[in-house]
Amino acid sequence: AGAGAMGTSSQVELQGEYLNKAKISDGGKKHRKNWTSTWVVLDADQLTFYKESKQEALANLKPGCKPDGVALCGALIDWTTEKSSRSNVLQITTHTGSEYLLQADCYTTICKWYDAIKKTVNSLSNG
Ligand code: I3P
Image (cartoon, rainbow, N blue to C red; front, top):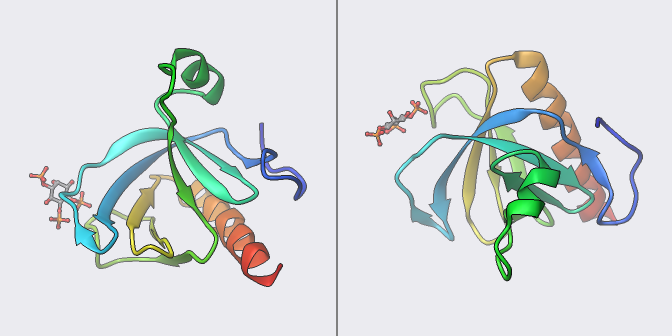
């Protein structure tokens, strides 16, 4: 796993780490913050959150259930120091007004995700 070239929507751009995730608002409605450790997969137009590695998660998924995901078209990504007491927190705001925080204890790790997500968001708005 790792960063790959840009490609079709099913192509994985980045995966290979567990990140801490908290959804803090849904369509503008505030959510109670609940950090969970999640296996994150970035592909050409979305982020998907899995409980365990993608292969395991897909194997364990109940029929008709879809993993939790975030469409990145029209989304904004930024660092935040205000929305959490934790370090290394980035915020994603979707075009529908849902807000997600992603955090890793390792700065290098979260930077890699920031850069890759930013690149994906930019490619979607320019193309
Ligand atoms: C929250 C929990 C979160 C914390 C959040 C608390 O309490 O401790 O970890 O966020 O702070 O409200 P609870 O479990 O009782 O809901 P951080 O770790 O990101 O600081 P917040 O209310 O300032 O967002």
